[in-house]
Image (cartoon, rainbow, N blue to C red; front, side, top):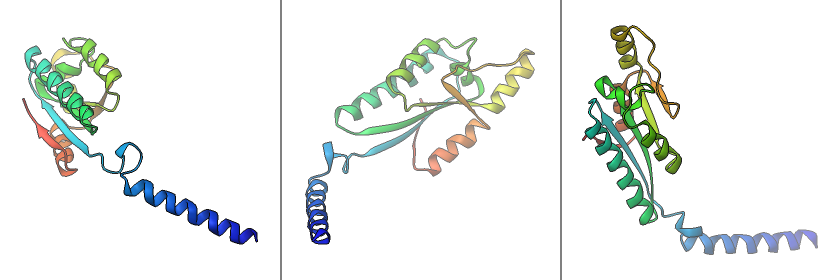
Length: 154
């Protein structure tokens, strides 16, 4: 008798699950599209930095508005490393606010660029706490494209 009840209970669960997923799952989760985008910045220009951050914000808001999501990585190298520098970034407060608003964004700083700046300036380069260091910015951008990320360079 217990086996019969277990089987009928299981059959009911399967029927309910089938109906749920046929309807697209909870809140359309089964059909929501994930967009993957990599932004490239290699200029020490506050206008370009703000353009990248504005484009990023617009992208995130657009996809959220249509019920989709985006995974975004912003890669800074060469003179663009200034975007993520703790000592000189003209937009570090905006970067912090955006990370709080969109916690999935990844800020990547090029290690090669950091080493070049340290050699030229004669002191260690620190990046903002929200960022991480990748071995080479150009390599990271290549990896992102190999993973299917859309590449955007302002």
